[in-house]
Amino acid sequence: MNKIKIIVAGPRGKMGSEALRMISKEEGLELAACVDRKNGGKQVKDVEGLPQFDAYIYEDLEECFQSVEADVLVDLTTPEVGYKHTKLALEYGLRPVVGTTGFTEEQLAELTDLAERKELGVVIAPNFALGAVLMMQFSKWAAKYFPDVEIIERHHDNKLDAPSGTAVKTAQLIKEARESKKQGHPDEKETIEGARGADFDGMKIHSVRLPGLVAHQEVVFGGSGQNLTIKHDSFHRESFMSGVKLAVEHVIKLDMLVYGLENLLD
Ligand code: NAP
Picture (cartoon, rainbow, N blue to C red):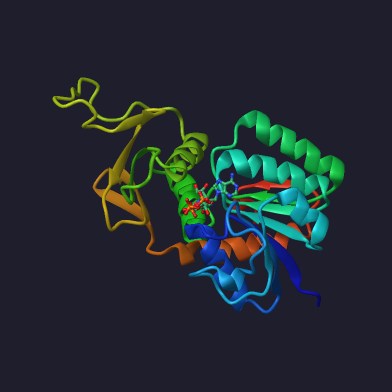
């Protein structure tokens, strides 16, 4: 079988460099090139900290698409850049796998339409950690039987947004599975503002930010005389790479946009 040829955008980033390491270990994947706003013209192996690939680095994505033959663009940059890169990749006949979060509804609708017209696959995955994707699915299932629930997410203290995208997605899935419900005592009062966390459809979301953490979430369901806790921990960015691999292997068979890794699972 032919190897899947990949262009990685954002190779010096924490996710991008991890993706390069994953590609270097996978028989069926090949790095065709990288796109980086620094190091244009160099080979990947000449950049400190990156794996020993002979592939070239381009500063301009369009120039890269014109010069290199590839099947998939793996974009691990920022939401604004990821959107532009996805559009351009589709224009050039490549299938994008995108890990950046924060696409607007309009951007998603536009990309869905473009993928359909071009008959090309796109995978946009706000969370590549398979365990986290399963945690969300299990939580949706549990909410049908345990509608009282609170979400506690914990992340490193460099994270800018709160609550995390995963916590919001979990809350949305729970909302789909249960009747709207205002939880806690009807007369409860916060003596310090924010003590009860953020409110989403009556359930509470608590965000912890501390050095040493990576990405962790507990979904705690309360019932009479029992609690159920569904917990996931990402200890290292390596935890996202089995999801990136899964997305790359699926996207080449798709002819439409798929949002969320859960839609690729059996
Ligand atoms: P990071 O370490 O800051 O890496 C981002 C990379 O993108 C950097 O190399 C950066 O280059 C590059 N970049 C930024 N703007 C660019 C531009 N205009 N053109 C080309 N490259 C550009 O961040 P990270 O932790 O790896 O995360 C990368 C993305 O993945 C983020 O959007 C994050 O939210 C997302 N993420 C997704 C998951 C998931 O499971 N889906 C998990 C973790 C993170 P410079 O160094 O030059 O700025």
